[in-house]
Structure formats: structure tokens, C-alpha cells
Length: 472
Image (tube, rainbow, N blue to C red):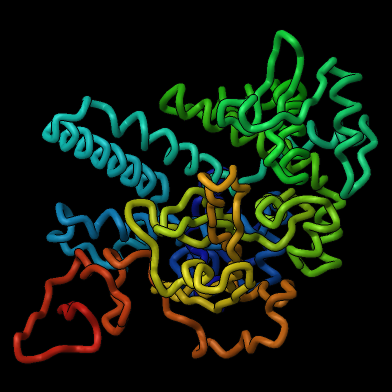
């Protein structure tokens, strides 16, 4: 609890943004200036009553005063300073934590600079290998920037929610069976007809819109939840264009490719909000205790669609459990990642093999759970299951992914999956890392690489339990 209540740097930044002296802020909070000074220097914890006063007096969400963002920044900095070009400087974990807390904007600038360095280095390597200059920039950077865009905004967009709610109300869509209502709405409002066609008629695509004929073609291999989703997406292209344009215009994205990816992501967000309207979804989630299978049946969506929607329920004043979400393929590549729960995903390397998301592939279709603790002490309750994407026939077998969601351990009791788990037994938590290259655990039997920030300790006469021994 102490880690969560020592919020000196955040309170000092809040005071400075409000243009107040310590004496003035202390007076508004009903405490002495000397006590506030001790709080700002982390010499005193922040009590619950004082947190409530801060929220009311300065109109801030209590979650905004948590250290989740600081931990996320610190996790990224650990990866940066573990790089071989910087590891020799010996930047300690304590220095990293202090930087993330005291100067978060400077820390974010360091992360951006490191990303730019990685890009330049990859471009140089491409030239050395005889590849076209800029190949990596075009194929990799936009996708990473788009993921960071959604990640940094905790994957919630109120403007898109309101646009979706307007469509749901006007189309009078029933929960779980919106297909006919969406088809009728698309025809009546926009003159769009929908046709289900054989795969050969789409040239490998699953959705194609013929603007001239105002016809939406959907591949017949798509299951019903996906057909509904793609139709809602198409309606979003027409109904949510203005809020999407505003969001993209203010995002200051680096390239047109990134802007397009973000637009696609926002229209996908719209489709999810149409199929699972906010008020109905958060009410059902609370009633069913976030049982994803039951929510999938109730709203007529897939397991992945339900997980994705649950990770977006962060409306101010009516927030759900802050969930992170990740989608991983069999090779460990991350193709989706969103975090409303402060979980730090590896940005520059692979994730931890001890994480239950990877274990899900060993038990296809079964839901697995795990209490996992990161090196900084943050503990999360994790849920994982595999899903299979529709196949195109014998020559195109289904694609399998592992979907993972999770929350901080303190809120795990709100999830049905935590029933019967001794959440108070922190000793039972699985120790995981962000990735082998930055993990300092010296007793991991599944370590694939030595940590970059420490020197190897090799003895030809000794074979330890782990693949690499090193000196801290």
C-alpha cells in the first residue's frame, strides 16, 4: 500500500499546474504547509481522506493520481538503458524510477529518441544488406506508433462512443441479434446493400465495399459475429468520420501510414461500441463478473471481440475494471496490445516465456489464469485463452492466437476467473519479467538471453540451473 500512496511528485506537479504555492494548496486541503512539503518529498503517505479532497478540490480522477503511468514509463526506460550502447553507463533502477516520477515528459522524450535511434539503426542495417532505404520505416514504425497511440490513451474515445450510441438508438438494435437491424439501417440511411459472396469473388479479401454500386461484399467464410462487426465498421466509415478526423488531426502522428492505421483502429472501436453499447456492456460485465464467454453469447460477438470491448470500459464516472489486453501468435509476436491497467508490455523485444499468455497454446480453447508479479513488484491477475480465425479451406488452415486480459491484483476479485484463488498469498505469484534482455531475475530456468545490463559470470567447471549466470 505504501507504494500506492507515496505520490509526492504527482501532487507537486498538480500544484504547479494549478499555479499554487505550497501554503495556498495546503490551505485549500486543510493541512499545514509543512505537512504538504513532507508529502511532496515522499516523507509522508497520502491518506484516503486527503486523496478524496484532492479529487474534489482540483477536479481530478483518483486514478490519475496513481503510479500506473509512472511504472509504464519506467518499464520503457529500463529497456532503453539495457541497450548495449547505454548499459555501460550503469543507470540504476532507482535513477530510472526517479526520472519517471519527477520528469515524466523528459522520460517520454527519451523513449521517443530511443525509438528514433532504433529506426535509424535498422535503416542503416537495411542499407548494409542491400535492402531499399526506409523499408523498416514503412513496414514497422507506423504499426508501432499506432499501437502506442491507443495504448497511451488507455484505449477509450468518448467521441466514438457517442457516435456509436446514436446509431444504436436510431437503428433500435436488439442486444445479441443486431444483424437484421444493421442491414436495414445501412439500406435506409445510406442506401447500402449487403451481399454474402464466395471467397473467389473477393480475391482473398474478407470485406470489400463497392462505393459506386453502394454494395458491401462479405466473404462467406466469416462467422456471424465477424459479419456483424464488418457491417458495423462500414457504417462507422460514414457515421463516425467527423470524430475520427478530429482525433487524428490532433494526434500529431508521424506519417500518413500511421494515420490510416489509427483510422482503421478507431472505426474498429466504433464497430465494437455498436455491437456492445457502453451502458449495457458495463452493466452486463458487472452482473456476470466479466465472464467473457457469457458476455460473448449475450451480445453475439466473438471471444476476442468481447475481450477487446472490456478493455475499453474507461468512461469517466462509470469506469469498469481497468484491463490490459494482448494478442500473441504462436511465435510470440504481439499483434494487439492495450493497457488500461498499467501492465508494461515489451516495446523492443520478446515477452516473458513464463507468462500464461504463452502457456495458452499448450491447452487450446481452455481458459488459464495466473497471478504474475513483475520485477518492480506490481502484481497482476492474468487470464488467457486461444482463439482460431476462420479458415479459407484445406490450403488455408485457421490461424491461432492467444488472447490475454488482466488487471491489478487488487481488483481481481471482481473477475469470475479469480474465484477460489488465494489472491492474498503473494508468495504464490509467478515471477515474470518484461523480457529476457531487461529482466534481472537470476533464477529463471526459462531465460533465453542474458540481461544486457549485467556481465556474464561463466565458469567452465560449473553448470547452474539457469542458462546464463551473471554478476549484478
